[in-house]
Every structure is written in C-alpha cells, then in structure tokens.
Length: 58
Image (cartoon, rainbow, N blue to C red; front, side, top):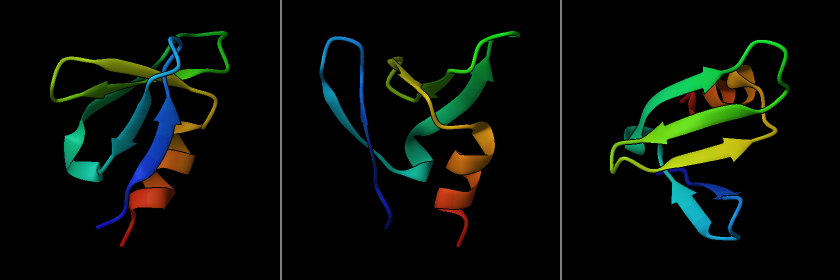
C-alpha cells in the first residue's frame, strides 16, 4: 500500500493512502487543492489533482 505524506497548515503530518480520500477539491483561481479525508479532516496541498491520481495509480 502506498502512502502520501502531507503536512496540514498547523504542521500535522498526515500519512494518506488512497482509500482514506473521500474527495479532492480545488477553488477556481487557486493553485492549492484540498484533499478531504474519510475521517472528516481536510489537508491542503500544492500538488495537482493529477499528481495525486498518478501517485495512487497501480
């Protein structure tokens, strides 16, 4: 199983696997995406949506 390491704004390290992601959103005009986790938390990232999809692609 692959894990992506991301830091939230408060410095918390998240180890995210593909099954933990419930949604990925991006505000228009913003370069950051928000990864929504099944536990209800949100993590902002400078990755693109395609980066995340490619990372978890098997």
